[in-house]
Length: 238
Image (cartoon, rainbow, N blue to C red):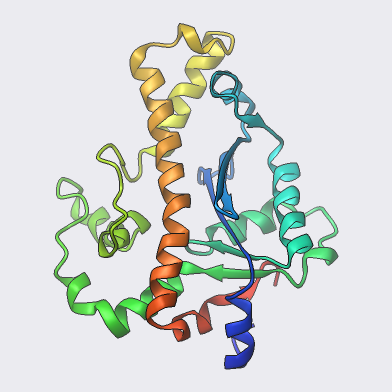
């Protein structure tokens, strides 16, 4: 897919786009998935430890494999491209469906928006980007550099900025906190403390921002230079 012709890649980026962001930890646990398709935003809880949160907010609870297959089936049905920031979601697809026949998904296109973003910045926004202050001034030097290229940091180059309580590197901890509390309270959300409830709300808001930022960033790059997408396209399953 990296060597597609200019004509073909322009056709691909005009296909419908399914924007996806999973919340997961390094061990591969999938807490939830947020996605936007045809201007409709949805969140699905994929961790049974968060069932009480899902019930309170009337969110769907689903097995992560089943939910992923449903998303991919939607993309197949509508000839849509999967769009995510980095290749993390692509790796999740491959990990979740490693024991499943993926023949039907072999032609699905995956657009790594981070790769397109780097091209856009290098060609058109380098000085502006370099002049941005640290995304989180209180972060350690070890975290500041990768954080500077995070989605929320990049969105400072647009008019869609992260909420004030957006906290990089804390979402997993917040989800673990509310999950542990819900287990102790037999999934009764009403019995959680205000702090525990707030952590759940903040984690969901974090995911919502990350999903809703994707189409805005895509359109920003698209309107400036479509060729930035040329090397960002791959198959969902290599």
